[in-house]
Image (cartoon, one colour):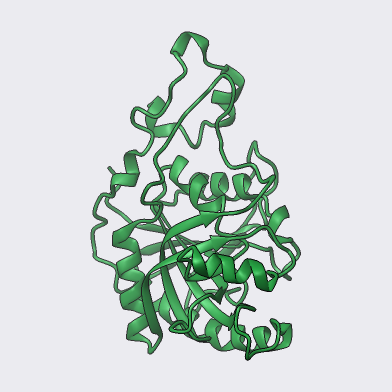
Length: 289
């Protein structure tokens, strides 16, 4: 088991760079799932290896539904990542989560449609559990880092993943509140599902930019206000990520997610699709030895 950290940072709207990165170099990584959102920025902070991928690409060129998520996760796996910290801008579905809050997500409700949600398929069937879809230990480390730099933290948040690119209707927003969701965004699914299949412990920090449109006393979501709040959130997020990377435990402790594929592949060896196995060489590296 790898006892050294290689942290993959997936930057969303508002986080486009990592402060203090040493030996920084953008590298192209080819995957059998296509071209990732962008090159991956390799570097380090102290002894910790970093791999940074802007989810929407530099310049924010990918719509949420068009993000090549399988290529992104495969590329981060090929880049040697042991763990993934995702940062995303989100709307708030709760009065107690005002703009400027940093929500540590531990559950999802997935309302996306038409996005490839698995590395597996006919000829190589696998079922992994996403009952607890995020990594508790990495989420706790992220929460401590954001608090250390002055961020307002909310833990145990449930994220509603919507298709987009439009924002919610008021009826949808109120429905999601009734479901018990806390924040809403467009990008964390199927990203979290695919990270689990890739045996990459995944944590998500949702940076609240606005109240979604459920409040009767507020106008609809204003993109200009969101962009301004994103800039404020991004400054704290960059400081928090740098703090996290400088204060990680010297030795990486194992996560149950490191072995998420144990017992998950259902297709008998004699009936497995070799082409799909080869396509998943990075994802199945541990399982296939």
